[in-house]
Length: 112
Length: 112
Image (cartoon, rainbow over all chains, first blue to last red):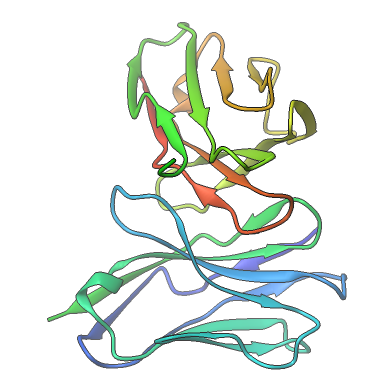
């Protein structure tokens, strides 16, 4: 069965600095998708970035980028120039069929 | 259409009572998903619909849980004979085919 592990329950970063959130997954599939979602307090989950496993190039979305290491089954999220509005729970998720498999989340705290 | 809406946002009930949650997806989305999220955890898949057909149900979905999407638009999730372990946030999400999932703000259930 596929699993997703986020080993950092909480991370903190100074405003304007860079932070990296870790995610590892386990699968025997070769074709799948990986996602990072953001869940601000009392707000809905929103997609931050997605990566197709067949693409070697790491996905980027403005200040958000990933380091996708397929052989190591690692999918970390880098947030550059952290802003107060980045404070949220961040979830890593995996999909090969129609289901999303989620990690337990990392709480990101931004220090002003 | 402003996004996925869920109702009610909060529900407090006594053990043994029945509760029903409603989800209105984005209008052009044919897929609708239900997830359950407990504090400090990622969402857990419950079930999903493509149009009005319920295509997959998690083993987490006991006989006390039932979901419908009668006309392929809104969906309801009913929990019968609620138990304290049912206390959680119930999230609804919709997508067009296997595209990006858009989430509602969730319905928080507290069973006393």
